[in-house]
Length: 527
Image (cartoon, helix red, strand yellow):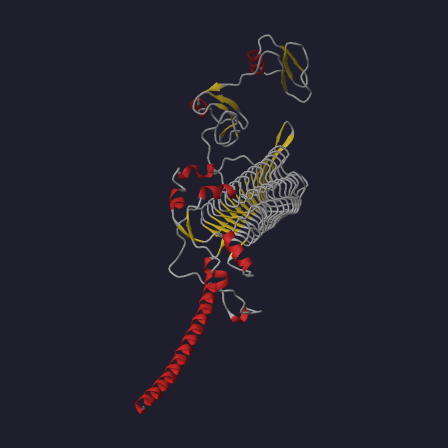
């Protein structure tokens, strides 16, 4: 017989429900029998089941509640509560043992409430039944993102955040990959850091640090590289010991090693050059195969493609060099010829237009000096084929000393220095230099004088190319001048000897005359 209370409860649940019983009770409107596994089978398409609703005070007033007793609490931390046998436990809506709510939780205890596991099994997350995260207690790795990490991974102490980050099966450890497909091709990497979309995407080397979109994404076996910047080192394949900081730095580098680029698009075109240092936006931008160059400053050595062992310090310094080697340029716009070798330019707009030529200062410089005189190397131990064949008077007497004004602006135009580079210097830039009265020689006239004297004069530099110009080393004139003085001294000494001989001859003649006059006087007296 059905208990009267059960019937009353059944009618309370649904006044119109059809009741059937056999193995269990069915409450429905279809006449279906209760499920064989259920004591009470309630079904409906438009109604639910209500359990007793009460305040916390009423709940706590229940005498000797049965284990498993269920109620809905309406005040305090509202929700469903079940009696565990010793205490009322929240099973929804909050409370110390409640499930985590989708709209937030309250009344939690940081020391006892958590999301996770209580055994050594990894905690995994899925979205749309696809792998989206894993916290592993065995590998101590953290993987978050669509297909981040790989189920076959044996690496440890790794962090992968982003779609496909660290997605290849690998055995490396202590790696950090943050970004879409970052380090996705890793195999046995160790100590590698990749931050940014596809950063170090194909790398399987060690000790690399790559931060930035597409940074070092094609690197395969290159190790111990560091890059920070959008597409920095994105094409390097096997290069190592590289440092790139800035957008596009060393972007095209493939096999070049030991290069340092700091500044947007510095060393951006380098593919196989080694040992270059570029500091400044656009520095060494066009370098492809040149090695061991140092460029410091905006666009320093920007157009050098294959030149090596060059040093350029200063904004736009070395901007004319394309293939020259072993050149040194220090100062804003300091420059040497495109293919010059062993040339130097020191100072703003200083320009050397020939190999093995060093220039100090621009055309506006009016004084170059120091507290002591310039000293040239002169040591008998390092000189050979010494000859005394320096012409003196024959050369010096053909020279024409002049005074003149130097056309500084015209010379800068000859060097290829445009007026636009001087716009910040004002219209008076050349005035002091061009108004200065100078004393010297005309190099072409010195060349002619030396040729006529048969003298290979080292103080004369003749243009090596049509872009070069004549120069004179005035200190070198000292040698022929000394020779001229020596020759002149010999002439003076010869003349002095001739005078002395003439004086002696005159003295002898005078003595002879005196004797003759004395004899004549004696004869006159005898008469």
